[in-house]
Image (tube, rainbow, N blue to C red):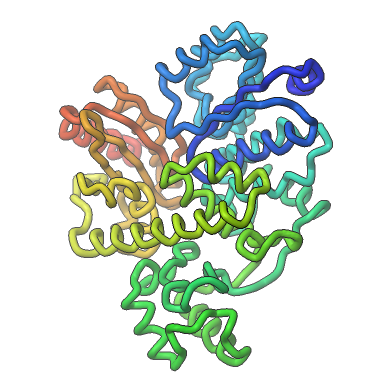
Length: 433
């Protein structure tokens, strides 16, 4: 379907999600179309809603591509008079696609979209046969953005990894800390959230104390350390979390800041969280220098917001319910990173990992909800995507996602009743696995 529309020289409409995976998904498609000299118009949105779909329905385009979103709106997109491609990896609702719609989603083939294929991966599969294997690395950037590659790649991601290795990817063993060449060491360690370093990740004082304890200067950059000092640091960090040393996925021809795929994902995520979607997409399409300078400042700001959020979690803790827990704030900064601090809070042991956690942020008359849990809880029966979809629907909201991470939007006035119902649903899932 895509090749036909390219050959007809039509303007192809791309709509994608605003996180690192969604931006990477849009980048895969946009870069492929750019190489084919095809015309395209891209919009990045925080969530797909019925009013957005209704607005798009009136646009005069022959092909719409929804990447990293769309699978929960197959019924609505079936009614488009144009052709539609959905390249998603979130849970599906069982609605069959009509003849005008191509639905690419791992869940349709009983493949887990929370760990085996990202939204960018689904997007890559849509362009792969156009001789675009050299864009496979963008699918892996998206996987890192969706927390899928930190322990190695599985499922379809592993097949995409082979495509990337064929073309432009190298894998080296190294210390997996961020901003090695751009931040002083104490910040580099404190800004490293994956793999988590309990007592160091998100804790500038903890990071400084750790470096002083092992006899290293906290103000020096990692790249300026002597080899013996790097060996000392590596040995001490491995004691805290052995996963901190392992495979790093690199594009040798890229500039240093974007050479590591995981770092690339962090840059895109920071732009997305700061609503600079055009900036993120321009970087993914090849713009450098000024764009990267701006993005670096946004990333530094975003990381400082996460640190502030984790300090708040450490101080206040999560509100405990019977089978779940939640964080709630109306603080402007905390609201912007609520889902991130919920996720990191679990991994660095600031939040009880034996219960799913919801991060709640008030947005005028609504509440945005980000749900996170652990793989262990999923194996015990927890499915956040289903629980958030069903509980939010009861109050005129909408939700969904993955079993391990999901989101929802509900009216503010329903907050307490929603939390009660969600908690009951989690209890039911745990007792009826």
